[in-house]
Amino acid sequence: MAEPVTVRLTVNGVGHEGRCEPRKLLVDFLREDLALTGTHVGCEHGICGACTVLIDGVAARSCIMLAVQADGAEIVTIEGLMQDGALHPLQAAFREHHGLQCGFCTPGMLMTALDFLRVNPTPTEPEIREALSAVLCRCTGYHGIVKAVAAAAPVLAKRA
Ligand code: FES
Ligand code: FES
Image 1 (cartoon, protein in one colour):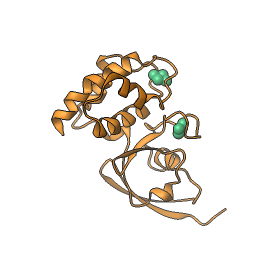
Image 2: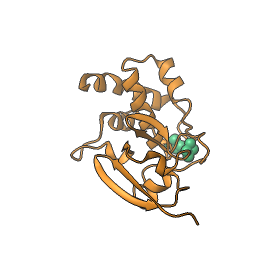
Image 3: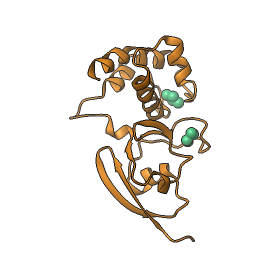
């Protein structure tokens, strides 16, 4: 077994330091070492998008990145979206527009959509569909998800 390495991360505004094997994936570090299990593990191959988090503001798949590679980064996970007990506007839009069923893909959908809306605050529907096409939803179909992202876009643009 390789010598453990130290990993320092800021996650949802809170500093964390941990020791783990150099080969530990970021998603496993978040879930197992920091108990932040909202980030889901699906394919573990960078395909499904379930494990998407924001790393220094940019959406990234935490199953194809080592924890040690994220050393020093600012990470936002799904647990970081609620503020003062209130749903983030994107979460509220998913609820209102039935953008989820089992919820497995939802954390990855939300983090992907957040980054997308940061880059493109006034998207067209085809642009939303294209942006979310890399996150696989096995149950709802994408209709409600696309509606939710479209509804949240102006709300988030106003906050920016
Ligand atoms: S679990 Fe990371 S992309 Fe599927
Ligand atoms: S809501 Fe079930 S996988 Fe998307």
